[in-house]
Length: 328
Ligand SMILES: N=C(N)NCCCC[C@H](N)C(=O)O
Ligand SMILES: O=C(O)CCC(=O)C(=O)O
Ligand SMILES: [Fe+2]
Image (cartoon, rainbow, N blue to C red; front, side, top):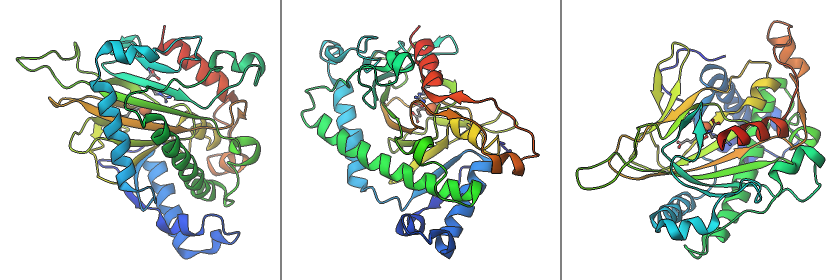
């Protein structure tokens, strides 16, 4: 459920991380306070900033810096890792190639997904079968992103333990068959600045149209100094999520909306880069297991009026239907 929030809260999760794999974490007052703040943010906005997350600021910055360097390359160089259906929709897409609600988005991106081996999920996984395509230039790109993905996966698992405590009283609901073998998506995104008198720019101003994310939890690492991400509140106002150096912007995806039976919403958001400067964002998406059938958790049904509000959805089917409409 979204509310008329006017800003997005900042949560220091260090107390949660310190006790995250302790069997008695639920009894720790520091953990309980983080869980309370997570619960409130998820109920009111579906968006929050995290600090105290343990990923070095230098790494957050380097990930954005190599992304800028890649997007600065000439088109002929970037297209060497062109996204294709054969590569399981992994690779580089030019500005305007990604479609949101029928309108081309003014961003370019490299899309990466956890590897899906041939036959791994039968017909369900076919569309997503493939290997990531990494650029040779910048030279350390793949190594850096591999490290980054590992850290984001681990961090997301820990935040989900906090969210699990908030929703059910147990830290383990998003492990095992639900998200114990979590799928992940990463989008390295570049948004051209607005046109200037002496240079080219985008043809419309929507960097990414209004959408929700598909899985459990998103970690957004955005450029400092450019405010472009906007989040829609209950009245339909667009609330900015300005960059706060060293933090991630986190938000709830469609699968967590279903698990929580709507106690948490996957909030609509969009990106408009009104700055003359080029903006980079590296978004990491933590998902359920690829083949998990997601349905409202019994405790969440009980806590939200006793009626089941959503039908079961298989995450992989949801992803595939999105990917196929994103690229026509
Ligand atoms: N994997 C995720 N969540 N990607 C978000 C992309 C949002 C734009 C996309 N065209 C859409 O309409 O969904
Ligand atoms: O660029 C951003 O800040 C967010 C991008 C986003 O919402 C997405 O890729 O799903
Ligand atoms: Fe998004």
